[in-house]
Amino acid sequence: MIYQDFNVIVTIENKSFINDPEGETIYRDLILKNKYKNIKSVRTAKVLKIILSANNPKEAILNVTKMCEDLRIFNSLVSNCEVKITNEKEKTEEIKEK
Image 1 (tube, helix red, strand yellow):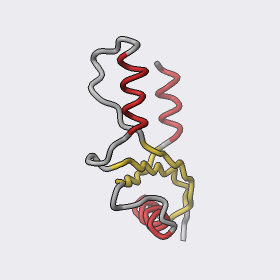
Image 2 (image 1 turned 180 degrees about the vertical axis):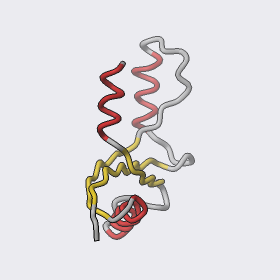
Image 3 (image 1 turned 135 degrees about the vertical axis):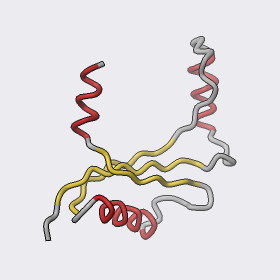
Image 4 (image 1 turned 90 degrees about the horizontal axis):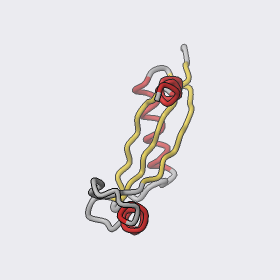
């Protein structure tokens, strides 16, 4: 088996029907007070950055998804969990270009 390293991003966010007090505070106190009138809403989320070895991207996503479920990293009744592969090098280069 040939393993390769994958950068996986896990984003955990409250479902849309769940209040997000932290997001509401940021919106109200930071955005509106600083006159960013074009901002319509703010939702906060937790992000996990995981590097793991797997055979392919699909296996990497399945492994991380299973880990999140087994360890109860999120509560599926109130939170959405998105798992995706990312390339950290590309993101770093993107930031430097700006």
